[in-house]
Image 1 (cartoon, rainbow, N blue to C red):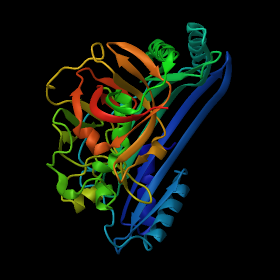
Image 2: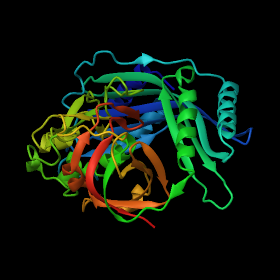
Image 3: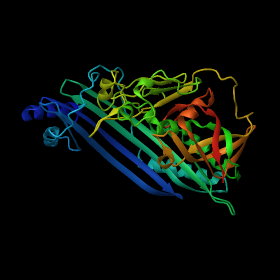
Length: 446
């Protein structure tokens, strides 16, 4: 891929040639290698180098056109600028996107620290060893149907005709293991684990194996559960799944589109237990491959969403911030329409609970490890959910796997029914979060 300076020069030259005064370009390139194995043999090896840019052009009437291309040589950029310019005359007349007012603000410590990629043979060898260890860990484990070891180098840039130029690059490696059991007269049981780090050498593959084994074995002796109201403990990953599924609550674009559980006037409203605070923090130290700017060139930052149970802020693009008289937050992606999404959650205890709760002493508590079918079981605009889950019934530290069950409720009621936020946070793919205890949730067993 051409260097950012070359692309900037091509863009300026071609824009001048075409008489274009105002434009911006966001682009990225991803160099990725991933492997999968099956029963001691390599199953799939993939290598890809994907690049693409999104070009936006404003015409003399200040309407905007957008086009995307993977061709960033002078000819490709000229065609993209020309196409976007032609499209601009059919662009929206109201709430036209504009440059972010923060696109030229300097960013300290932009990452450019890539890790050398490991050879494919090493990836296969490490994953084969992991699969072998899993299969030998317990007689009931008879397969690891889903697994993967991947490494990727990512380069991103943003530039515009007002002089903004941003670049960053980083490396990410990840491993995923998901094992399955088979025992005579019993249903197959399964569980998985995930680890991420900056490079393959730093990946905690042994920790991933250990977690997968422990979870899988803990599901072997399962029992049915009675339907009813239970004290429920959400694992960090399960709670963040719900928080993401109902992201319209704090998404400014959803609010402006009247597709949200919130309104613009809800800032300062108590929506959750005072025990919990939620921050969107792209730059959290635990966020591997943290992005320092968004698709509009706005610097990313810490955005407080819920403070001691009070709705404290929304996620904004430059456009939503302008319409709601706020600041952009670095959560925008550009395309045919600018979209807004969270970066990396940080959920933490905001106040001491009335009673410190522990799985070692609690009786008849359900620990939900993993929520399933979020695409089908969540009614985001109604705030309700009904989701199958993997989990355990826990009695004074003793775990009994639940054969199959569904948890249902109203998300805003869940937030208000939080009775304990544990102290110790855990890192998940979506953020950092401790276990969350929620009172009186409906569980439907078989």
